[in-house]
Image 1 (spheres, rainbow, N blue to C red):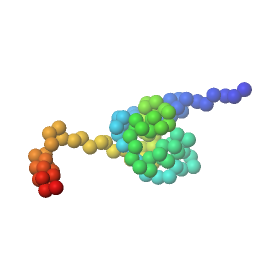
Image 2: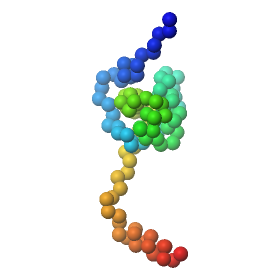
Image 3: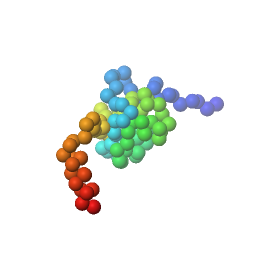
Length: 108
């Protein structure tokens, strides 16, 4: 009889608060997967050689967002990955930038 594996929400995390991650937080690997890493951690590290959002990682691994945040919280604590908040753009464009673009287009 084949035994079902434990669910990640049972295995992952040690009860501490989760890292402040949202769907658009970008994750980048800082290290190669150590021998002690879980399959999920190894997969995340292989995927994150280039920045990927938490939403993309969740989709690629077919894991719920909440599970991915638990795994990433542990990985952030172990300094295996870095988390970067997305840049917040200004609601109103900078006038000097718009003028520079307009003058550049006029010269074409």
